[in-house]
Structures are given as structure tokens and as C-alpha cells.
Image (cartoon, rainbow, N blue to C red):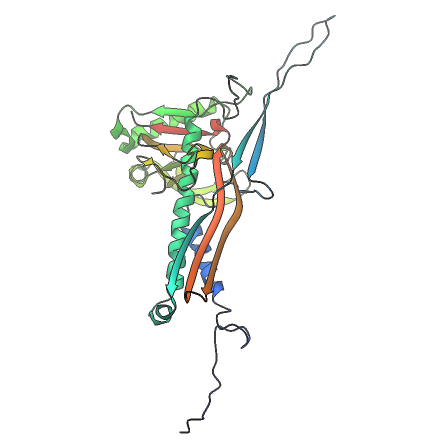
Length: 334
């Protein structure tokens, strides 16, 4: 064979046999991360995420309830006051996952390292976002008064209330299905006294696996179809007598103390840190939280010529905070 022989080779990474040999390397990684998050997240799509663009602050306004009065013959009818308040959320942190792959080793592994890394990125982001939402749901439930109450304005705005708390008689009661079930009922009573309808206001219950299986094995949970107020139908485990979905997640921080959370900083007074060691379960509606994102999930694979390495990235920027505290409740251990 002549040394001058040449071959017409195919570069499968090229676009139409032209340009960069890695032009097609991005697509698979992007899909892997997003699909993994969808599978692994317990709250994906449950809490609305509003876009925060052109500013770092998301604002919700609250209006207090109206006051009725009676007409008295011969007397003028004056207007009554109405409370207005606002609550804000600041998005100020980018959270990311990054892996750096040396050039040679990328091609010498017998498996698709980018796919495996993408799955790990997706799982970690799913756990992180779920945990941050659960944290703020618990904090909403622990508010003694409305989150819209101004300094010194106890009881305002009218018609807005704090969260609900129900304390078990003993720490071990969280694993007693009958006692836990009764505590959930008592918690729902307190929430309904604040005009929250657990079924029609899309309240969900979050627990750790131990509590979930205690309820499941004692037939306190049933399989069923749950339809949200927006008309979306989901398959879920439902609380037997109340038809409310119950979610089991290791991302639920019950029994934990969280410090140094990546979204905590001095500007938000370390809002994502907290002592949740006495928490057994939480109930909350999407209305209990305000969430916003400036950067939705972005994934990328890029080549750095200087270091001769591949970079596998996934990043996002979002925030979440308590909104309507009365739409959240928590069951506590003594």
C-alpha cells in the first residue's frame, strides 16, 4: 500500500460534514439534565416560577379584606379603610454545577462521560431546588402573623393570617400512623379557620420516607388522580379521607439543621438556613410561596483551547420566599 494513500473519513460530530467536529455535542447533554430534573424533583411544576428580568426584585402586593357597615336613616355613609401591603423577593445568586474533562481521557473512557455527568448534574439540581422550596414552605408555616404585616402593624392587612402549627404529644408519634393522621386533621382544621380549603387550594403534604411508609402500610394513603385548580390531572398518593396529595422526599429537611445554604447571604439574612430538627411534616399550597427566576436552567458543553479541556456546565439563578403564610402549616415534634 502506498504511503500517499488518503481516505475520505466521516466526522459524525460535524454538521453536514462541515465545520467543527464537535458541533453536535451539546444536544444530548442538555436533554439529559432537564429530563433527570423532571424525574427526580418532587415539586417540579407545582410552584409557579415567575420571570425576573430587568430587575433583581420580584414584588407581590396584598389587599386587605373589605369592611361591611349598615346604613342608618338620616345619617351619611362614609367609606371604610382598606389595607395594602407588599412583599419582595430578591434574586441575587447563580448556582452552578461544573465538571472539567481532560481531552485525552474524554475519548478513552468506555462509557459516555458527558451523559453520566449530565445525569448527576440533574439529580443535584433537582435535590437543591426541592430543598430550597421545602425550606421556605416550612418557614411560611412558622410565621405567627401575615408575611405582609408591617412593623408594629399587628393583625394587618385585614384578612391575612400567619401559618398554622400542630405539635405532636411525643417525638415518636410521627411514626405512629394514627397519631400522625390525627395531627394532619387538626392542622387542616386550623388552616380552614383561616379560610384555606386544603383540597381546593391545592395543598400538598410533604414528609420524609419513614412517615410516608408508616401511613402507606397502615392504609392511610390511597392511589388516585388529583386535579389541581388549574385543571392539571396528576397521579399521586392521596390522604385517604381528605384527597390531598402526600409527597415523600429525602429533600424535605425535616429533622435537619441547614447552615451555609448556597442561596443564603447577608442581604437576605441567611433566609435558607434554619433549624428544622423538630419538623415532622409540612402542608402547603402554591400560594404559600413566591418564586422567581432570572436565569432558567442553562446547560453547556464547551472546549477550552488554552487548557485543552472540556467543560460540562449547568447553571440557574432563582429565589423563593414565603408569600401567604396562612396557606402553609407544619407538624412539629415536642
